Every structure is written in C-alpha cells, then in structure tokens.
Length: 187
Ligand SMILES: Nc1nc2c(c(=O)[nH]1)N[C@H]1C(S)=C(S)[C@@H](COP(=O)(O)O)O[C@H]1N2
Ligand SMILES: [Mo]
Image (cartoon, rainbow, N blue to C red):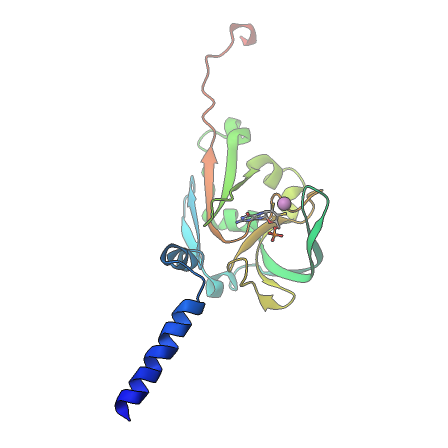
C-alpha cells in the first residue's frame, strides 16, 4: 500500500514537472521579478515589493491601452493601479551633483528579459510624461501575473507599447557621460 502510494506520488511529481514550462533559468528570473530595486544616483536606494508598494501613494486610473508601434492595440485596461514613477524617484531622492547637468540624467527601467526603457529626468519632472508614467501592479482589479508582478508604462505616449515594460525588476538613475572640451566660441 505504502509502495503504491509513493509510486503514485512520484508519478504526480513527474507530471507536474513536465507540465511546468519554465526552465531553471526562467524560474530564478521569476523570483527576481518579484521585486523592483530602485538604485543608481539616489540618496536612499530601496526595494519595492507588493506589500511595500501598497504603502506608497497608490492611484487607480481608468481606460488604459497598450498600442504597439504598428498601431495595433495589444491590450486594453478598464482600470489599473500603481504609483507614479516620479513619486518613487522622490522617495529615493535623486542626487543631482551638478543641477546644471539635470538634462543629462535619465531613469532606466529594466526587465528580466532585458527589454529596457529610458525616461529622461526632464520629461518626468518638467514635461508631461511624469504625470502619467506608472509602476503598476494591478490590472482590472487583479494582480498582474502573466507580465510579471510589476509593469511600467506611460499612459500618454502616442504609442504606449514601446515604453510599456513587463517583468520590471529595476529602476536605475543614471547620468549620461557627455564630457567634451568647452568650445572656445562659448566663452
Ligand atoms: N519585458 C518586456 N516588455 C515588453 C516587451 C518585451 O518584449 N519585454 N515588448 C513590448 C512591446 S513591443 C509591446 S507592443 C508591449 C505589449 O506587448 P505584448 O502584446 O507582448 O504584451 O509590451 C512591451 N513590453
Ligand atoms: Mo510592440
């Protein structure tokens, strides 16, 4: 009886493993996309989790659409819930060591499959994208699962697909390296 039970158990286990489409690599990736690290040129780096994002300034928006650059609508969202990327950056406190170079700062949103997207400091703080670029964790009232736990997107982009980042695991503040000799005509 005992032998039969354990054989049965082994069979179930083998079937369960065979049915799981994830490779060992993808499995560890799933684990890493459960959190979003906020790092780079910031005073207070931190890590976002589902419980911790709910303590931030969460807002629910209506009527989102993910439109590919081909013009095709890939997905529509009745509602989505998240925190403004700018509010996340404010919590981490961007360090502008030379404010005159603020135009050279950017925010790199990274994902576990290396689909990475840049937002410039200027558009987030002085342009209009800052008011509509979200780190979202709920779509239509449910946790996001198929696209990882966290997605970034800018709701006001003309085509929202290209800057829609699934499986987000990192938000990093960077500065371009733009050193060049000052032109004599500027003096
Ligand atoms: N991490 C990640 N995010 C991504 C992509 C991707 O390949 N990886 N593709 C982008 C593209 S091209 C589009 S149009 C939207 C919607 O893609 P989907 O229809 O495959 O969900 O997600 C964007 N976000
Ligand atoms: Mo796309």
